[in-house]
Image (cartoon, rainbow, N blue to C red; front, side):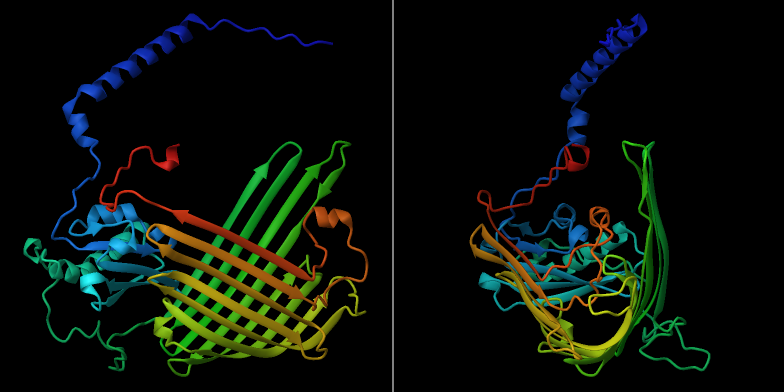
Amino acid sequence: MTKRYRMHRPSSTFSNGLLVAVLMGAALAALALTAPSAEAQLQSTSRAAQPAAPRAFLDCQVGRDCDFDHFRTEIEFVNWVRDRADADVHVIFTSTGLSDGGRQYSIDFLGLGNMSGRNDDLTYTSAGTDSGVETMDGLTQTLRLGLLRYAVESGAGAHLLIDYDGPALDGNGNGNGADENGQIEGGFYDPWDYWTFSLGLSGNMDLQETETNSRMNPRVSANRVTADWKIELSSWANLRRERRELSDGTEVRNDVNTWRMSTLVVRSVSDHISLGLDLEARNSISRNQRSRVNVAPAAEYNYFPYQEATRRQFIAHYAVGMERSDYHQETIYGVTRETVPQHRVAVQYRAREEWGNAGVGFDTSQYLHDASLYSMGFAGDLSYRVTRGLELNLSAEAAFANDNIYVPAEDIPDEDILLGRQSLPSSYRYQASLGFNYRWGSTFANVVNNRFPRAVR
């Protein structure tokens, strides 16, 4: 039977409302085009290049905390340029995560051209409880302080005003007092002894007539980081519930609970050497593991001092330990549980320099009870500034696995593969990418125009 649809004529009330809306929109548009005050309010930040100001090139890859528009708007005594070849100072941003959820940002200032050799570095540390605004203000102030010397060197010092709005200094300023025993270590008293704790819960739910999905993720962590010790304790779970109704009315469920607990204890032996213990317990339905516990004492050597790790590192890492697994199904080796020795070697080099950044790494692991059970992987990436405006990006990864001791003896059902519960074992994986970017045009990047932000388009 053919269905018929009838187009209804809009009511007079709706037509009148539409006409009023159109007329109001036209009036507002005309007002915006003719009102001088509106034009003044909508002006973008725009300033001409200052001849006495230093030229700064910002090289920043710290994610959402690198707001170039904000830096350009707040710091007006430098000329921001788009290419390193035009700069007097190359600013490199790097960062590393901290145990309390905050980050430590390292800002390196590298003098170029007439300012070659005038290098400096500053750090800014944000707390895990800081808001995005607080972090951005702290980064901006640190960047501003680092650029002052270059402004003075370029001849712009006469136009700078220096002020201090902090409390008057009194005493030696070594901290907030001693503990109950009158002892002060490191210049201040910390009642938490550097421990930080985090408790979180997240989840989502999607309910439809023929399909429902829900997920819940509880997590707990405790961390203590000092110059001598690094302790990280964490636990996490993913509780997932899925229901789908097929065309014949059959209901299919996919309920999965996964969890992970880990402990890391690291002792700093010197500026180049660390010793530690890595303990992990987890389950994995896709790997046929009801539970797996891995205990691995390890040693690590960094050719460069750890203080330079955000800029450059050349690390050799060795771990040896035991792995205890309890399987859902009997494996191809005829066991349902086993304890086997294992060791792992990893080498990594990373550098972030004026020419760009690069990294290459190699890792291999092997079960000691059977030397034929091993895996190894290679990975590398390169971002290289070939010449003015031209940047080349390369990355590649290869992994070989001959240690899939968890594979069940029985065939894996197709429905488990389709639902993502289990996957067929693979002995290799390759990945590669190649790209380049070329930019030309105006040297300066002082202008900020915030109209039509991407969030509303």
